[in-house]
Image (tube, rainbow, N blue to C red; front, side):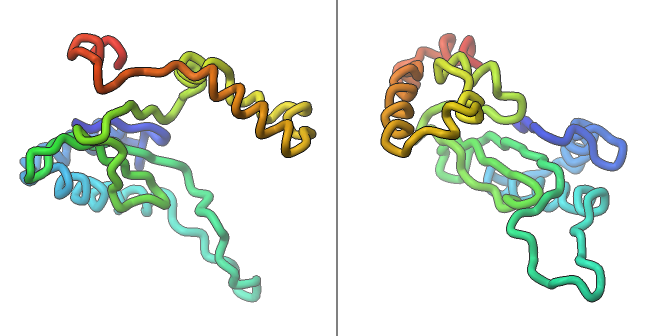
Length: 171
């Protein structure tokens, strides 16, 4: 399966349309192969719509430290050739090589995109609190102590102990 976040459209078409076209090719292989192939398939329309910005002639040639093009992220889930279930993450523009987010050997949950509500529920506070003036002006020792206290608010989810229905309800 594939889920995505960030940019929902490429070249005026939804990501669902692009992925349906890819599926029509009847791809085969394990999750690692399919994630690589999906990344390569979407690279062309992504790069076409969001070309790399080349500095104008005569300007400093120092490349930017980050790519400012819009984020397009995907999670590709499936099984590898050894029967291990995996969730692989692909992020355009910078993380095109699929990386393992979780597997049946290392459980957990991933969320991306509009995460403010789920973050508040799981963390126990709104992470944007760190952008407020009192947090920005904190002394390092007080900041570290506050972060430890905030970490204690996080809801502990026993992923390894969840029954199938509990995992479905959590999703």
